[in-house]
Image 1 (spheres, rainbow, N blue to C red):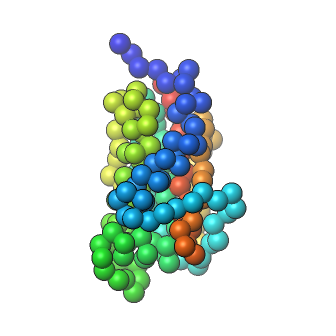
Image 2 (cartoon, rainbow, N blue to C red):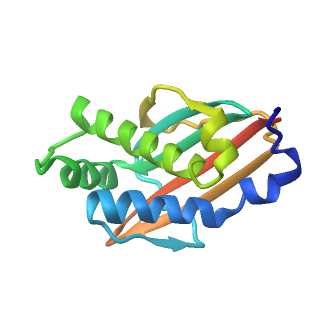
Image 3 (cartoon, helix red, strand yellow):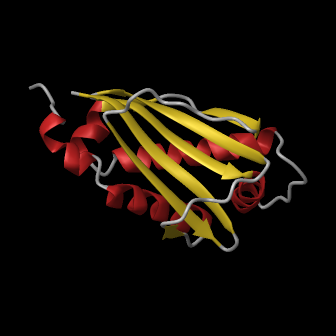
Length: 161
């Protein structure tokens, strides 16, 4: 039996699925309470972006983006260590957060969970860069805050069967 999500695009693109995924990963896995925020995340000079690709009945990506301060706090919460700067451990931690978010998000729709794979995370760090995605079929973008820090999560779908 062929799986089709085309008729269910509203269910797949429901922002509540992303909110629930962020709550699940941050509260249950890291002990961090996050709140959704309608405003844009302030841009720091240095940022960290992780991307996990989707393949199968949905092609696209989960993109996690934060400033350096938020990335350091998240990595510290994950590892129990303090970090002076963005090193390989911090990058690996942010990549894993993106991977957990992507997995939690796709798990919210049974047809997606069973018929959509994830790529290995790619992590980009630096200053003054933009990640461009060509004409997505749908996109869910949310900003979340914890304490004084913020991060963004975007689900981009460029193909849906």
